[in-house]
Image 1 (cartoon, rainbow, N blue to C red):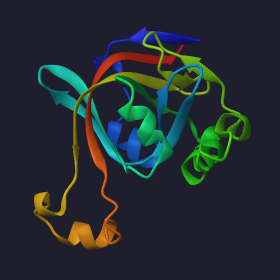
Image 2: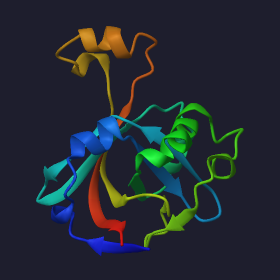
Image 3: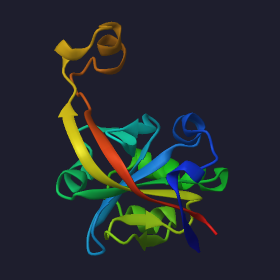
Image 4: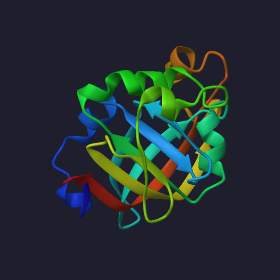
Length: 168
């Protein structure tokens, strides 16, 4: 099913992985979890470890799960899963069984964080840092007008990538 690789062995361009293919951010336990589609974030190196960056708005149901756990996953899929990812980004897990409706199959990493068997790549991550974005912190104020006109700012998470898995 999945094989563990070094983060440095991920061959795909992270800009394409996140911005074009999208990803699912998933957190919780086998008993209760949620996932959401995201197309903003990043992958890099900070504090001498490989990291990922994710942003989540506090009104998203997944936010509660991320806030209450130390670990989460970022799962990346092929084009054949676009419909499932679209559903996970447009419906709330508060009133929809996203697993059933999307047809995705949960798989749990060593930390207990949820991921999905249909993914091509899974990054198991541990939270290192989080902070709410605020209007005062933006240097380019046009970003506020374009993306935060309603005042619903994201929380930024810096995540250590503790394991990377690929279909294998």
